[in-house]
Amino acid sequence: MGIPSSKHSCESHEATDPAKLQVATLLSLIAGQAAEADATRSISPAVIAGLKSNDVMRMSAVRDLGGLESGIAAIGRELEAVAAACGSTGWCLWNHLCVFHFYCGLLGPAHIELLRSITTNRLWVCLPAGAGTGVIGRVEGEEVVLNGIASFGSGGRYSDYAGVTFVFEGERVPHLTLVRTDQRGVRIDPTWKAMSLRASATDHVHYEEVRAPLSSVVQFPLRYREVFRDPAYPVIDHRYREDWVALSDLWLGCMAVGVADAALKEACSGIQGRVAIMGVKMTERPTIHVNLGQAVALIAAARAAVYDACARTDSRIAAHQTPTEGDYLEQLGASMIALRLCDEAMRLILRVLGGNGLREGQSFERRYRDFQAMPLHINAHPDRVSEQLGRHALGLATENPF
Image (cartoon, helix red, strand yellow):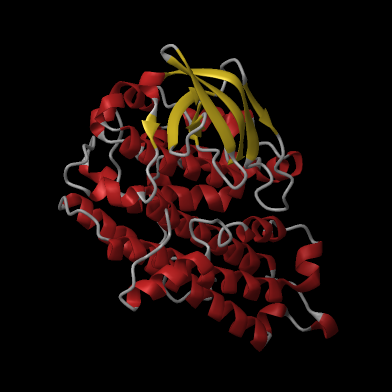
C-alpha cells in the first residue's frame, strides 16, 4: 500500500483491480444488500444465487474435481473484496471454500465422485461442529442413522451439504459424513443472535433420524493435519496436504484487511468538508492526520504479512512440498498478526470518526461489529495461536488438536 496522495486520500495501491476478480460482477449487489442483510439477519437470496452460479465457488477445488485449482492468494483476494462489501457474505463464502478443501483431504480419492458433483454443480458446503456439538450414529443395515445437534453452522441455511461429525453408539472415535441439508430430518434452528455477522447463519443444525450410507462415512482423526502430511496417506491432489485450518486463518486475515481498508476509505471520504467543534475542518486537524496515517500503515503491514504467507503457501504447493508443523504455525501466526494490526487500525478509525461519524449512518458501525468475530474465531484466536507458537519456539511439541 503506497503513501496516499492528497487527491486520492487513503487509497490502497496494492489492492487487486476488482474488475479482475471472479466476483467482480457481484460486488455491487453484495454491497447493496449488506445493510439489509445485517438488519434482517439473512443474506439476500439473489446474492446467494449469484454466488452459487459464479466460479468463485470452484476456486478451492482442483481441476480433477472440475474446479479452478486457484492459488491461495487468489482466493484470499476474492474473499477480501467480498468481505469489504458485506462481512456476513464474506464469512459464509469463506466457510464454504476452506471447508471444501478440508473435505477433499478427509474424504479423499474414495469419494471423488461426490466431491466432483459438488464442485461441478457449484453446491455449497458447511461444517457445523462447534462447541457443544453432540451427534450420535447407530448402524442399521448399510446405513448410519444420525441424531443430535451441531452448533456454529455458518452458512448452513444457504448450503446444500453439511458435514456431520459424530460418534457411533458406545464409542468415542469421531467420524464424519456429508448429508444434504434439504433431506428429511435435517433442521436448521436460527440461533445466531450475536452482534457480529448477523446474516452469517452461524446456527444450530438438528439431525433427527437422518440417514446416510455407511460407505460415505470416514474417520475424523485428531491432529488430522499430521495424518494428511504422511506420504502414505492417499490424497486427491498434493494441495490437500495443506491444513485447512491454516488456510482458513490466512483467508480470514485477507478478509480482515478488506474490512479495515473499506472502513478507512469510507472514513477518509466521509470527513471531507466536515467541521469539528469550534468550526475547524476535520481534514486540517493534526490528530486526524496522525490517526489516519497510523491506520494506513497498519493495514499495509497486515496486507503484507498475510499475503506473503499466502505466496509462500502457493510456492510450496507448486513445488509439491509437504508442509511441516513450522509451516502450519507460520500460517497461523501471519493471520494472527494481520488480525491484530487490522484491529488496531479499526480502533484508530473509530477515534477519527467520533460520535458524529457513528451517528451519521456510515457503514463503519456494522463493519466494526463484524470485525469483532474475526480474531475471536477459534481457528485464529490469539491465545490458541500464540501459545502453540511459543511452545514451538522453545522446541516443545505442539498440543493443539487442529
